[in-house]
Image (cartoon, rainbow, N blue to C red; front, side, top):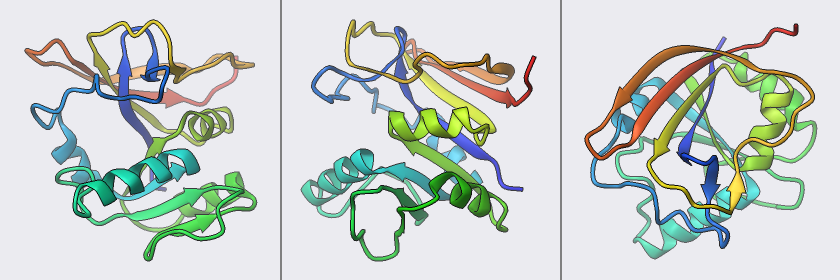
Length: 180
């Protein structure tokens, strides 16, 4: 079975974006393991808001998305969109069952890119296999948190940690989907 990997940038105080949706605090001076990560994946799960932001970014940068990102099958999870770009797949009904079905298909691992609501639903359903968090050395103080209150504990096993000279710390955890 393919792994679903929640991989994203986060501040030390747990935010994935600032109070106005900004992510200008993310380091872009080097790849911070992205190129190696890109070799592991061939698909992306993305929520509506993150999809729209990515589309706007791409349009404003001559069609260029995330630097170095290979061609991926993008699964856009949205109950309100009626269409997505060519090559992307809209998942609008039975989203958690569909995510489970996609995970069971042959292929490389899947990047759970965001947003927060989609990540929370996938975590709650036990679909996330790994967390890959790029912890940036900044305290935003407000914005959108990655994790909210949950009805159960999630146990994690550290798979890898890497510290960069910029102060960014990359952490990879296996999510232990067990109930105690």
